Image (cartoon, rainbow over all chains, first blue to last red; front, side, top):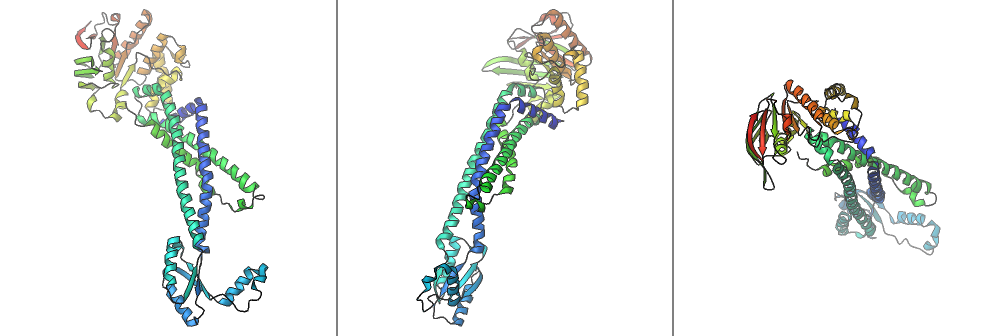
Length: 291
Length: 220
């Protein structure tokens, strides 16, 4: 059977050339570890960005002269927009109550305040897919044209910052992952190429004795998969140790570490990613075998 | 079994073989002779497709080589046992594994491999050396390992390139005895040699090459 013999052959070669293979495994492990590490901030920002639509709300301030009927008309006009999910009316009294509750440690602010300076307002929740800087701005411009609305507040800068940071980090992360993956493929490619050249004579003999391309290639592909997979497994162990030390043991001293999310399921695929990159490197290294 | 029609092969504008035409019947044992550089090795390489002709047609065991797809080349080679001039033994494997490789390439099961390899090693009288590495063997023993490897899969055609190269007379005679036995079992044998003593008075057909030209074809 080809596979068990190929497996035996590749294991013999792997242990026969232990230093070059070990070095390749460590290089791949380091590469995947760095990729995984850099993925943590991207992942966390993504988590925050995903939660944002649920937390996001827009406050529409109403003209003081509006009566209940007028307010209902404004609400109906707003509801006609497909971006709107829900609208809550906040009376000026309620708003003041909420403000006082928020600033309960600084009550002096309200001393000497005879009249409620706050306007009536509407809290608008938008649909999840409508919460992006451009859509929100467009909606806000549309809403501002409705009679009775004096001002709209939705933390435009914050929203933009989060979104552009997310897009920027995602782009940077993607570029970084592509570069590192290319590097890892190159390591596997170089290793298999070196092993291939070292065995050029042997491979030539194989061909002359009637070996098929599959028979020649399979041990190299197994080696590539083993080197990549081992590198991936080592990086997984590394990232777990790192997470444990930094985000678990140091969380008491650095509180922000407590809220860091670790993409565990994604990291569990590191050995598989390593295997795929290893095989890719081996395939490129072997190229097209000619008889 | 083998047919050459008007075959020419050149290396860097130097003609190695020129307009060669001959045929070898199934079950024949034929010698190719000539001085060094006369084209003997090139002729054998064209048969097992290590080289392709620049002109002409070659047919081996029913395969027309110029029409052969690359993926079919291994299939043709599995019909041919080759005794290489430079042995091509793998020094990172013992004698058993060197011979067994031919069968592993054919996906044979382990039990059959053991039976066939030991039988083949017994034929060349090297059963007791199966665990040795080729480097630890003498030239004559290495030559016999190469023959064991060439015959282990019972090919229909056996090619031997200078099989008695630098061997003493007795060892060479022993190796020729093995070839005769293999041929007697029906395998077609083609031996390239510069040693006239190997085919003298054998009654076998001899193809004479001189500077790439086929200058004679007669029985000795």
